[in-house]
Length: 410
Image (cartoon, rainbow, N blue to C red; front, side):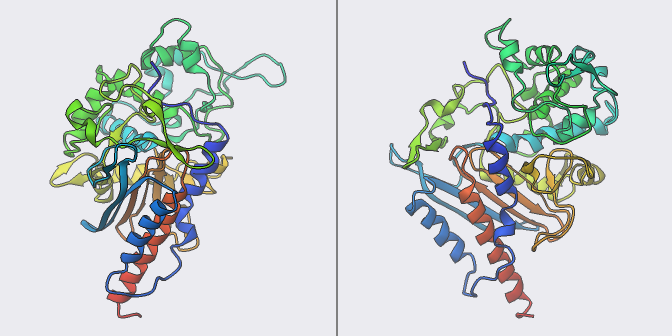
């Protein structure tokens, strides 16, 4: 059985997600023509993307404060079966799992169960003897100082998506779980001194195991207790219930000539939990469910009278923590908080403090906390951020037109 966290291409993925995270730079500054509904252009462009073969199906939402100002689905859930995509269709959200994992971990932080500057080995002793990979055939070197818990949140651990922990774990077990994977990781060197640079990778999966250790429960149970059930995210989880399987969107990939269905969705049987509960990319969800998560965050940690995080903890999660350390192009010059990319200064219409992330099958979200605006797109095309880029730009134009119209054009 394959793992729930798909191998992410070490070169292509950063390029694609860098473009996705920069999406608003490609259109938010433009003003669309006024009409009765500025979002008509968004609907038209979503249909155009289907007609052009850029996507098989898209679901888009835009929220301002606590009001949904736009929701629309277009295209097919399963083109081959002829079934239409609906607003409540279920998507593989892949790396959009990561912000939720970090939010769950921060509920333990609020309880005083760990400090961000604690050594990771305090909770995961199998990682106590980590070394830095030797260069040019030299021996691996001891760490200059221990890896911290904050490094797990920040992607500053020294682990990337090329770290062969799954291969190492499978030397001893056919279907490794998180405990097996982290134990294997303890035998492998990191690529660089933790805290010295930002590189995208498996850090949030390791954070998922830290959550399991703190809770003494599997990750899916902790998610259900601490975020999924309290936020009433009824269609979110590490598997899809059989009664909801007809709502699962088919995954597509570009063959070079057209979009083709991916047999089996590239992963596990979606109706059962995998052995590896991936905090880095294992969740299924709907647009409406995920919007409940971003709404909670946007509202300072609470939704419909239920508090998940303190307001100051949300602020901590969504501010930059990596400063001026070197980083891969994935961040496109942005900062990184405790699980999300952060705009550290206003650039080309993007407000300082805007935070965002995306998934490898084209799902993405963008939150401007100052304007209380959220843009969310659900797609299911492997390694293609193009539709998201277009949607972000068009939705941004519509929001600007609405604001200009409401102010009388001033």
